[in-house]
Length: 246
Image (tube, helix red, strand yellow):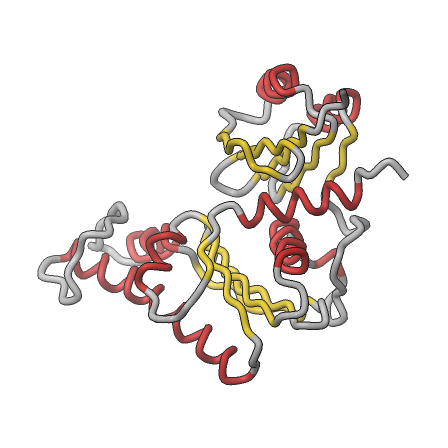
């Protein structure tokens, strides 16, 4: 029997992650310690994937591409990747690998709808795919950690704090003021973006994904899908499209 295992690698600015799929079912998500030959080889030997795909926004160890090529049907996300949507506005080479994967998932799972996919990572990205399967772009703003860090780095006295979901609307000391400002600010920003898109488009679907999506989804009044693994699902779709036997 042929292996139906696919490993999707997502190398972002803060973490190197992998997701193991058996056919189109997500089995598990892992964080890699590093991008060494050993880390990747250990995964490959454990799961013996038929297919692998890599989305990377960092300068990763190039040797791992050779390993994956030798051990599986391998695809690296790039401007020449076959995609299941069109990019009428921008050239594909200017679109980040992570955004390509998010749009592939939207086109696959919510075809025929306008989709706003909001990804919470180092930055917040707003990604709009219209009902004709055209990726029109969106917006990018600073993510949560970046906001906390910026206030610390660009002032003399504000401390660098860790996120916490337990804070009052009206901050009563420096820490709770920072928490309220950043986290309520993000929730209001996301809510405001969704409203602006809704005013313009009907037949509309919103997906929230990435780091703290579950928390923010619970804070928003709008009906949205929170799907922590949306990017990995998109990578799987692209792996199927680019690693097929023909």
